[in-house]
Length: 217
Ligand code: G6P
Ligand code: MG
Image (cartoon, rainbow, N blue to C red):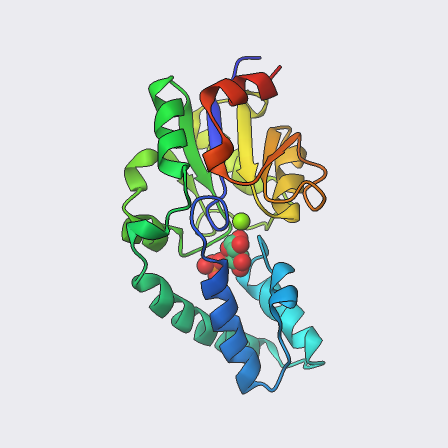
């Protein structure tokens, strides 16, 4: 099957927003007297906002009701949005724009496949909306990764079949979601952590059209 599309997770693949998520969650954890470390933050990568909150509350052995949880999640998001509102194009991870332009020039279609409801804001703050033919994000899907919904939605928007897509992901749950969608997956990060991916690179700066074609073989 020929390669027709590349689907990119956003946080940790194209932009480094993990530290802003961390700062906002840390602030909430602080208010609730919960110890929350950068190591704990690793568990939140690729995980939806409400599921992330559940993990943090569990660390503090707190079990508030639904209304309180929604209040906490809204507060965290308010702080997070404040951080990402001051993002600039300089925060795009190295090599991302070059690689995406290279594949687009070669006729490959591109999409975002992210759990984040803040995807439109991040794309506009960093000025990269035009690099993508479609955006599937937390505003259009219900089920969180490792469910394949977000990647299948992206493929649907691009009008391509799952086995014609390659996904780029930095989170374990995201790699699993790509596999569950029946897509090839390039892990962004460590080979040990993303062992289920078909191929792993440190970042998009290590990617090229030539490498992409080799992965498909
Ligand atoms: C991405 C990030 C997660 C985040 C999720 C939801 O998957 O990796 O850390 O929790 O998006 O983001 P949101 O911006 O909607 O809170
Ligand atoms: Mg990610």
